[in-house]
Length: 282
Image (tube, rainbow, N blue to C red; front, side, top):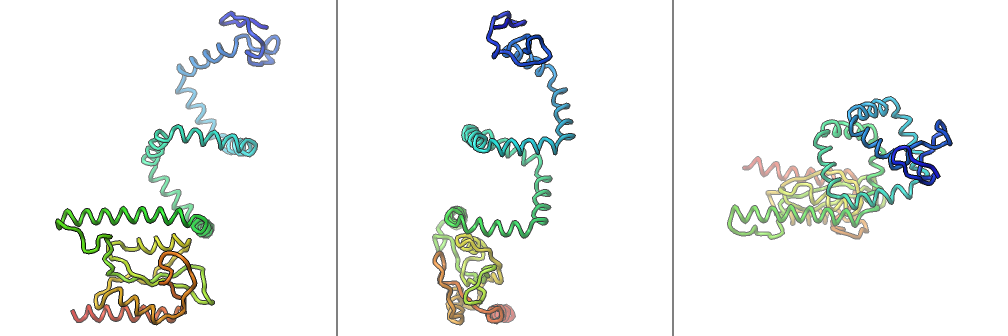
């Protein structure tokens, strides 16, 4: 037992901090009194403490990071559980804090992201491809939700401007033909392309949605508004010209075709020539 020099209470030794410089190997004041004293000091000297901590972090950044990594390795499970619990209990405050931090550091963060992207193009492409394949269902639902919101907004805007709903309530005008290639995928040693229709207003939304649902990276070869015939009939005509159909299962699976780059180049030339000819007549 030991008497605290501050509050005078008689307490067990485990209620005192160890200090080899003090008599008996323990501090004179108990842990509670130490805490009160330290809190008062911190409140009075906030600026001084913050300045010292900032300077120390800058001068010892490598050492601090190394210690943090070592501690995380030995306490990974406990720290992850603790962080998860904290995030669940403080969702709103964390969201506001992140938004404020991003707003204040937007320029710097975007510059960092751009630099990282340029320096790690190959690694990011490999990671993105793996992530897309492992999370097809989740990404497809996410894209569908975004797509549905965009369509609903279009319908509401159209109704406000015209007093009635658009001819197609789903918000797709089907006036644009697209051709995109599945990157780094082959069928019967031939590159795979998807030929489909969308609306000029929606742009690449449909392309992105389908590619993500399959976990594919894509390269757009053509996205053109059709004038001389309906986009649907032109799509069917092109599908008839290309008869190698990859066996895929999913959204728009019947619209994929495998063909050589020369064949696809001829198809694209035919489409663009017809459209340019029509514009010239106009």
